[in-house]
Length: 344
View 1 (cartoon, one colour):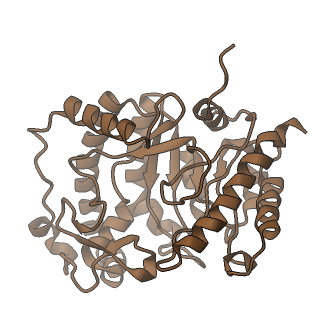
View 2 (view 1 turned 30 degrees about the horizontal axis):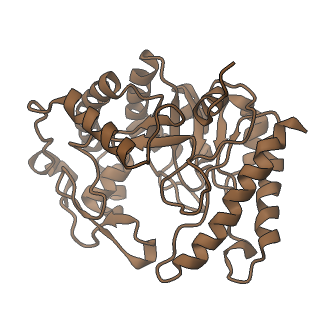
């Protein structure tokens, strides 16, 4: 019998099965892992976000900063849309008529494989098409103006979402055809640490139909659907489940994850759950404290299945060595403790 791979063990969890070990979900940004995670992300190269900053296909300028640990955000005070009613004059989808999808996707996968960041035999390929409908709106307009547009001009927001959805659904079908992903990933950070940015009613009316539209395409092809949403977003979970989402990352503990696990069981895989906000973030945290935080998290959320480890510490600018030291310990314990968790 062939040995179970990280990929298959992970995909089994998405089907509601109890895994043989705790997988590690890889964001590609947490150095220190002793081996590759169970997944890797791909977007269409012709429409992907600029990796190191710059303009995206819509004209939004993305910049890194020390405060975000070099993660990209739209450049402050340089938004491209100041009036939602004028979006048709500003937001122009590029033509994709000349894209050789087969060649483009083959090159992407070949390059990722050659760089050692993708192994299709051992890693599930997650397809994502964009940063999120809500996130694009605020990237175009800025947060305050984007929220005002949602409140004051919902019809125009809906029209913009329809336009964006038409564009990205076409990309999704092309990428599914040629990349043959294992999972479709919806990305949209609609919540902050303490509360959602928008109400459930606003989400349901203005954002959910387009999440669902893309989820429906993935399910048409028999591809499981995962949701990426940071922050305190548990109010949206019932809506995600309605459109067929089976996994959620990074599932931060500002949400009541124990109650969520009790309610949905293995129908909603919790990817994340680790809380770095106590003593863990400080320089004097001990190795044993780091390892115990891993064991406590796995003990809390992994019984019965439906759990994937997904988090570590991002590299603080000027403090990379300390972040890497902690991550090596954290990930080592994930693999050591997680490898035998279901064999007890």
